[in-house]
Image 1 (cartoon, rainbow, N blue to C red):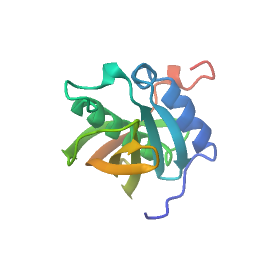
Image 2: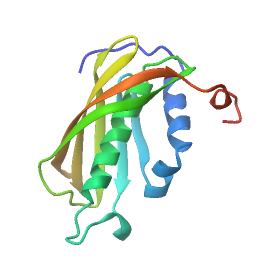
Image 3: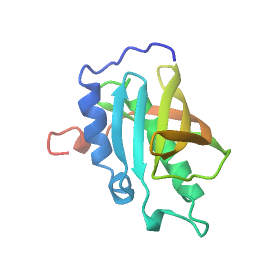
Image 4: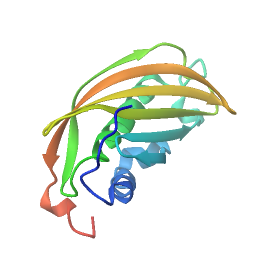
Length: 154
């Protein structure tokens, strides 16, 4: 992974705060497990309501988790008054999402002034064993956050 310099010295706290503000992340039970400049890891424990008819994590959930991990990897590099929106991503599911939990690792590949590109790998985890179940490329648009999201109450 290339070395990237965060623009916000409080990037770790900012990523965790913004992650917790998103209802979807909380509703599926996702948790940030690691934050580094340009890299974020997200864990999602298995629950019956997240699985499809064969007992695998649902493909839409795998795609959503990839989007989350990549987006927050990008967010770790921007200024305190910036966020981002996904403008494109491609996902290849390469094996069933099976295990006790999923682990998504998002890493920034390229950081431009207004566009960030990330690569995300999603693993099915059982105990300490992991199997790559999906890989993704994502393009993010850096944007100024709306003023109502910049207050301490946000």
